[in-house]
Length: 194
Image (cartoon, rainbow, N blue to C red):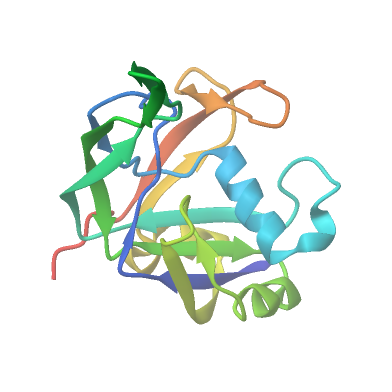
């Protein structure tokens, strides 16, 4: 049985926008990565895959965190409102306050089937969904598939990208608008207590 090479990424905070939270005033971060998020991160790590569809190199992942922090953010609408005052037109963009649930101290493990891909991934930072949510590589561990699926070292949430009786709709692929399905695998203790 072949071993996996697992790259551990860590950061201070991260936000994964749920696909159902387009206009919610309270938006809680998802605790799992969708297929399009993993594919996007893979294409950032391996830009030669930009012209290919699907996930080619990342064979598994786990996401854990310490807690979800409620943070307020001022947002503006996309469009402008105009009003006429005398001979002048006044333009403004209304603001609103949004409450976001941000994952604190996220830990993300990406598993690769060969050491070269893991070594290359371990030299780069990644972002969960927003550019400010930067995770840095910490280490590479070699593990068997059984260890990756059971060991507390690799604890976290993993959305398994397949459709079966446990699966649920997790969004629509932004490239081809096809529905994405998966089921949650929980390994160890995904919410850390230190």
